[in-house]
Length: 138
Image 1 (tube, rainbow, N blue to C red):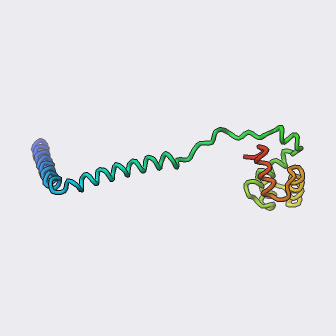
Image 2: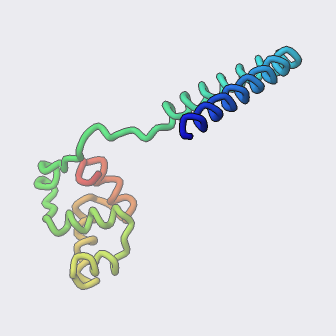
Image 3: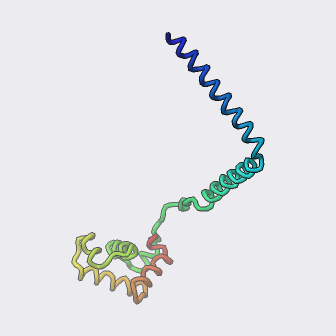
C-alpha cells in the first residue's frame, strides 16, 4: 500500500514539475526582456544590500579605554571626584549623581565645583570636554 502511494505521489510530483517547466518555457519566450531586467535588478539589489551592510556596520572600538592616571594625579582629582565626573559626562543631574553615589546633593555640588577649578572649566560641558581631551573619561 505504501509503495503504491509513494509511486503515485512521485508520478504526480514529476507531472507538476513538467507542467511548471513547460509554463516557464512559454513565459520565458514571451517575455525575455522582463526576465533580464529582473535578473539585473536583483543583482543590483544584492550589491546594494552588501555595500550598505559593509559601510554602515557598527565598528568595534579600537580597544578598552584606559584612564590617564598621570593627568588625574597631576590635577589632584580624587577617586570620588572621578566617579562624579564620569556620571557628569553621562548627563546625570546633581540629584541623580547623589542618589547613585549615596551622597548628599550639596556634597555633589562641592565635588563639581572642585572639578571646575581643577579642570579650569566654567560649565559642565566645558569640564566634560576638557576631561575627555585629557583622557580622564571615555
